Image 1 (cartoon, one colour):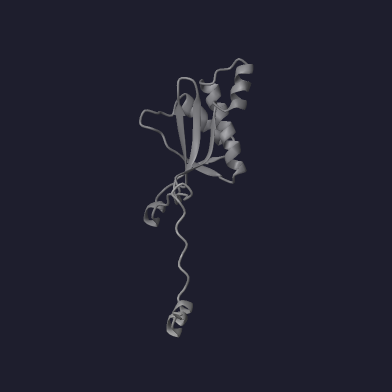
Image 2: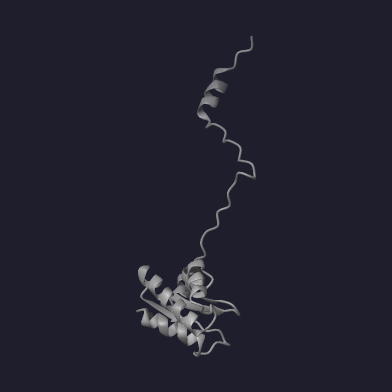
Length: 147
């Protein structure tokens, strides 16, 4: 017997529908934007930087794209194919010849990704001698320019 007044019906038609409730916490995905530095900082940074790390067992080298703080390319004697080939030929994964192979491999990967030049970042305890020199010289011999 109670009829809804015409004004209430028109009001319901004019309002947008209620939004659906948010999904439970388990279904929500966290979105993390990539790290981007302000332009005033990035115009003074070298775009690609070579970083090297030497352990007692392995040689690691990576090229970092500094404006986005991401790894552009990397090479290591820990990689399965390279490690097995070094062990098969009875070579060490940590000496100067292994460092030279890492530099050559990294240089080939950089040229495949159209990265023609890198700058070198040496830690304060690294000198241009031994393994460091082997990586840098073989990278240069592979065709990558050093800034």
